[in-house]
Amino acid sequence: AQSVTQLGSHVSVSEGALVLLRCNYSSSVPPYLFWYVQYPNQGLQLLLKYTSAATLVKGINGFEAEFKKSETSFHLTKPSAHMSDAAEYFCAVSRTGGGNKLTFGTGTQLKVEL
Amino acid sequence: GAVVSQHPSWVICKSGTSVKIECRSLDFQATTMFWYRQFPKQSLMLMATSNEGSKATYEQGVEKDKFLINHASLTLSTLTVTSAHPEDSSFYICSARSLDRGEDTQYFGPGTRLTVL
Image (cartoon, rainbow over the protein chains, first blue to last red):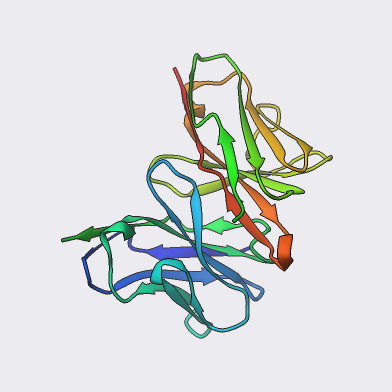
């Protein structure tokens, strides 16, 4: 079975500060890992995905994530937060690629303050 | 880019009635679509996998007779909530699998808010 754990259901940062959202995974096979963003009353938008290529993955809107097998982690970062980054962020894992069954974490609500 | 639409975006119905939600891939064909359910402040839970031309595969604990899924074409899947009750009130999100241009990615619809009175 696969699972992801997102540490911190709420994260608050100041505008311009570093964003760090944590995700740890559990998988019996090499995982495919994803970060999605959800704005209120909307569906999910893919930020980035790890598919066993480069361990540092760059995504949209200035986000990136690093796959660390030794730590079973896939934390999401952005050097400088913007007000528009305020949203819900979900980490997800899949066995065989993004087109197949995804198991989501419980989500992290990011708040950006002036 | 790949776009997935859902209709309606929100619906209010009386207890005991049935509601149909449509999920369409607008600019690509999707042999596989997924239906998720999201309760307030919670994560997405996969309900079922819908494959074009065949029966849907339901996750454990999801009542197939209550949540009817039809994937009649490569661009359309429907979810019908039969005999809806207040506990069925939720945010329903679909996604469609794209294999275009060598990718293997799910694109998500904007969701449908169902409120059962």
